Amino acid sequence: MKDFEARLKELGLSLPEIPPAAGAYVPAVQSGNLIFCSGQGPYKNGAFAYIGKVGDNLSLEDGYQAARIAVLNCLAEICSLIGSLNKIKRVVQIRGFVNSAPEFHDQPKVVNGASELVLDIFGDAGKHARCALGTSNLPMNIPVEIEMVVEIETK
Amino acid sequence: MKDFEARLKELGLSLPEIPPAAGAYVPAVQSGNLIFCSGQGPYKNGAFAYIGKVGDNLSLEDGYQAARIAVLNCLAEICSLIGSLNKIKRVVQIRGFVNSAPEFHDQPKVVNGASELVLDIFGDAGKHARCALGTSNLPMNIPVEIEMVVEIETK
Amino acid sequence: MKDFEARLKELGLSLPEIPPAAGAYVPAVQSGNLIFCSGQGPYKNGAFAYIGKVGDNLSLEDGYQAARIAVLNCLAEICSLIGSLNKIKRVVQIRGFVNSAPEFHDQPKVVNGASELVLDIFGDAGKHARCALGTSNLPMNIPVEIEMVVEIETK
Image (cartoon, rainbow over all chains, first blue to last red; front, side):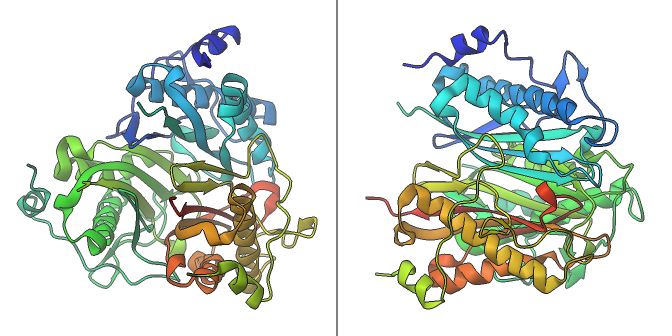
């Protein structure tokens, strides 16, 4: 029996408050034993921790940290529905969009900020399919937007 | 028992003809009780109602209206498979891509054109997870592309 | 009983080695009878067969061929999990992102490189929902990234 909540604490982390919705949607929706969460950026303590483009005003390391914060927000969304990380059976998919300068092509290394944290928390259950994508624009000019699908335990 | 078809009429709306496919795909696919639809733009009465970028030649309000038209096209795709909106149990996810001028960062307000209409039609069953994303380019230079996943009633 | 493996050979094709992961993720994940694969580009024989933007240094035909290679990589990812194309019941969804020059708007014709190959291999079981999207940037400056969801046979 895995204790993902204990592991999160061990990493010195805790789930944040869910960021306020930027529109007419909910944080996460369950269908069958899949949970689809809404896209999240690097919102932390009431504001975006990073604003701008990776490869322009932000470094690869900034982008990595932004992706790490964003995926914690995704997990907070999911837990708003199911109550605990321990109900997650496995992480199915992560999709990361990186707000990128024209000549920046290391989006996978940015999205690793999300992927590596998920592997740290969930171990084998964190092994996910992934898409890392670049774009020239994201909402509120955030550097990274992460979305996630997880599978939960069936009773 | 909800009557989403009646609600659509009450809103003065009806499902459009499905826009002609832009390639080698089908409007929607069912797997289990999920339906995945193909991406749609603001196609209406035989042509795109809006062409261009939000924040450039198009306003936020134009983008909002384009998203509203696009999500109706998504619902038309879904109904081509299941016959009636009333077979939808809930809307699971909406993803909206906004063709954006470089300094335009209000993609969530644009995608609200889709989200708010879905909430108007489906009420609680319309509460969905969402991703709003920006891009510099969409097919045929449309301002918005919407995709959608819904869950249908199991027998 | 369809033999998709035989059909692939008939087309003069074979599944490639899975490209090395660009980050901390796995090629594909199964949840229920859906398989979600990771995003793939035109990686072939140890390198990307195409680099750059469609409508800029690459032609529409280059993009089409890149999408065709990318979707074969997606199928290789899926088969790394299930062993054979013959276990696929149907292709559910393809999403294609095209790294596009500003004035290039024929993304659907590019993504047809993936869609038409899938229809060639799977016939009716290959009819999928699709999103074709444009962007100004993709990882490693590849011209196309394809992701795919398939449904497998239940026992």
